[in-house]
Amino acid sequence: MKGQHVTHIKIGPLNLITDVAGLRVGNASDGALKSGVTVLTADAPFTAGVHVMGGAPGTRETDLLAPDRTVQQVDAVVLSGGSAFGLDAASGVADALRAAGRGFAVGDVRVPIVPAAILFDLLNGGDKTWAQNPYGDLGAAAWAAAGTRFDLGSVGAGTGALTATLKGGLGSASIILPTGHTVGALVAVNALGSATVADGAHFWAAPFEIDEEFGGLGPAHDYGEVHLPRTKMGDAGNTTIAIVATDADLTQPQCTRMATAAHDGMARALLPSHTPMDGDLVFAASTGARDLNDPDRDTLLLGHAAANCLSRAIARAVYLARPARNDVLPCWSDRFAP
Image 1 (cartoon, helix red, strand yellow):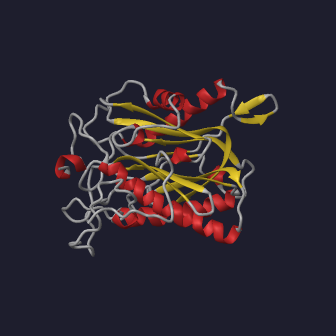
Image 2: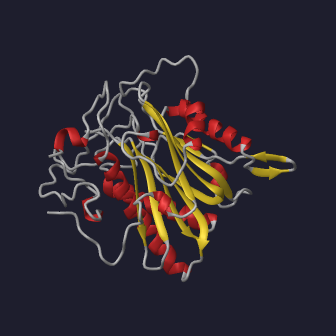
Image 3: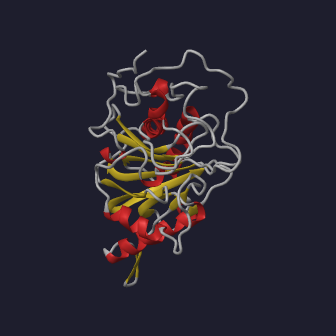
């Protein structure tokens, strides 16, 4: 069965989160380290929210994104490998933003606002014997590389990512709604669970695929044992971290609601999700470029679209992962590509 071709909606021209006009993404990777950083930024501050559902998150400045906080907009969002060490990536991004004259104005000082989330990739076969934390430099490099086009798969925060059965990676997807609003997702997939069904090539996200973007295999015919989870319990580490974004003009509470809805897409694409050992988290971003036509209906559509985009982005991350030296798990392409 081939991937469905959807006629009443369409993906953006790049099928990336940067189809939301004004957003840019940059990656920085270290092959020997088997880790990296991905940065979402824009030419102007943007409204953001966050929702955490995993039991073991690692974050920076997520409290600031609560709807009752003073600062309502951010300058960048960082996804990083490196576990707690990776939080230093946000410092590298903040330094670069400050040098560019960006940040929240406090008198004659500007303070860049850079929320961040990390995943655990310290036991993936990479060389972690650094003398100085490398993530600040990787963060600055990712910010400097930001553009509308960027690579997927084994790059950026997804460089050394793993799932229960296969390499993970960095994924993205977009959709343009009948309202004219664009929604996109960006995700680093390093899940405790699996993106594929049983021992086969089919993705849990198959019902949401558009235009064969992750192989066009369609849904699986045999789902195997679904009542007991297949996981990478033990030393391999985990956490899936994501950003969903739109050009719809959303408040911070509305962004938070969109991030909450997007977690449904994570649960549809990864089995299991949101476990006590995952730090599963979704940021949401709004550039505010397009007004809402019907706030109640539009926010419902935006949340549903964000969930579907995130499911597709997760499958694309695993589908596009590529082999590297000292890998501890195979890629999807190693096992299933024709």
